[in-house]
Image 1: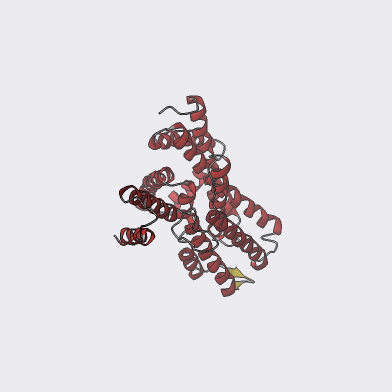
Image 2: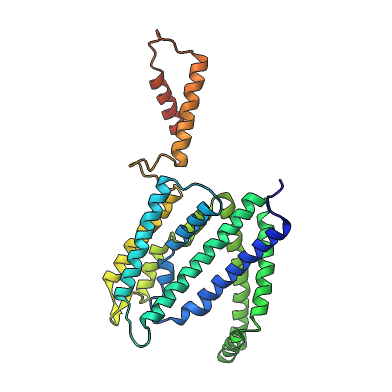
Length: 318
């Protein structure tokens, strides 16, 4: 099938997605860790931004609908994120080592990380759905562009050379060789992760992919608390941790509601879910089929409604 964009436009979009992926990685690894005096799990706890931004791109860029249950889940996720940010300013130790300005910059950087990540997924989804490009060709071109961008960036930032020298001087030759082997394994695992990411994006949606990024955050938060995170006034704060744990669970559940892994049967939230649409379609098909085989007349005393319900129950059990 022929796509709606030219080759130049497609290549440009792939280049832009590679650039966003590069910027997101640099912010996460080089800039956000600079603010180490704040909670290390903050970026993880704000993962719900991924679903909200991806849904907005899904609606405005891909021109696809957002239904009632999805809007409800986005609203709850948004409220939870606001509470996380407010509690963070309340519990965070603000001093000469971490000012409100520095903390605000870290919040802004985390927002950009999630924003660029969502934009990457949305561009890929657009190319797949509207230009019909093979997903692994997209991934290969992104890797090529990412390599070139990283190569030219390395001339402006030589900090990695200093880091390698420090590692080489601090450890033995065998340990340094083991470090290089681990880097190679890391590259291979990144390739597998990216393949999983783009396949999930193709089969489902960017919002399903983002759910995999923060679904098990509650477990990670428990591990972080055990390792000494959630410090307030110089010591660990259990209330601080419990608030974020509960909010993280709610965000994960709402992500499942958005992606219809969980269906809520109240206020019409179930109406446009795949499960209920399939059920209505089967019901209408069974009614139409029954009417064709046994035309219904005014003198018929047979309860066709009950018969159709029995058909649906039997099919559901099977």
